[in-house]
Length: 113
Length: 113
Image 1: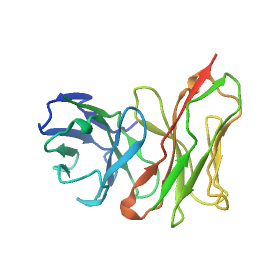
Image 2: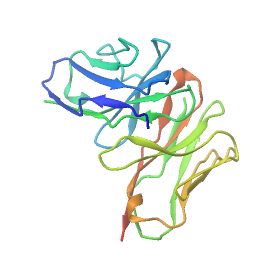
Image 3: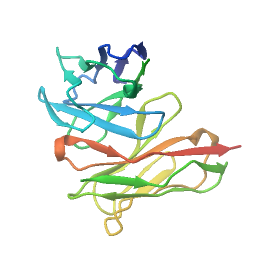
């Protein structure tokens, strides 16, 4: 069964360092998303991406964040200069349509020291 | 803006007890409604969905009915099992605003044998 895959599963970084989280969405999906979850609680929307551009972003997604789909398979989230409060589980998701089920990866845990 | 409110947890039940997790929503359009489940250490996965008023979504013994008049989508199960222990998220997607899905805060369920 097709699935969304994310790497790395866990990354530890120093404050101020750049981090890139990688995702391979399901191959025929057109809509891509990043969410984050802090301490296993609320799932917060970061950004949606369709047709090679950002469709919407939340107030969390400031200038330190960027997304890219560098080729036909990968979808990346970059944090330019990490802060302590960026420590969270980051989930990538994809969907064949703009409305409907999201298919989530297993997440990348980011720890900022 | 759109929002989802669900009952706070944790909810602790004995095996075979009846489960209700309340969820209400606010939306300007006609959203699709979802329940997602997150088992320990995993990503979110769709449990059930309903796309229009009076639809009933069901899966694995869980049910929820889309009530437009009360803007609710409560999750129910007649007899819970230990394996149902997880975090449950109510969510909505209205196909506008960048195609994002908004999640409630999550309700943690513990089922005791």
